[in-house]
Image (tube, rainbow, N blue to C red; front, side, top):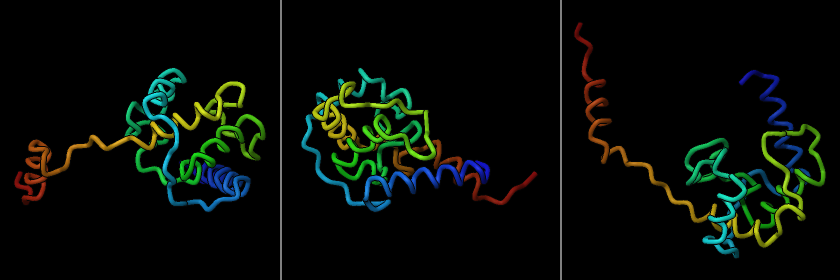
Length: 144
């Protein structure tokens, strides 16, 4: 990422945080939506297209994401509405807008509950024999 893009991204995040009136990193609240319904909506709105099927892949990743936008249902809904109702100073157009007419608050809460249900499926290093073999070989001195 070049310096101009970094400054634009940083400025957009800063302005979003100011608009939401929340800290940049906040404690996550417990969801009240229905995760099963959220899974269906996550597929229907094609969220997986950018965020992956389990939140571990994609851009941005949702699993382990501590941004203020995912800190609570309220922040999540504000983020979705802010994109639709009040364009940020430095608009980002790679995520669709979700006004209340295109996604209800209940649907957004359900998607939020589904996102919060994501669990890591990554293999632990100790459980990856091929990776351990590569790491062991890489730690040995090089002999041509």
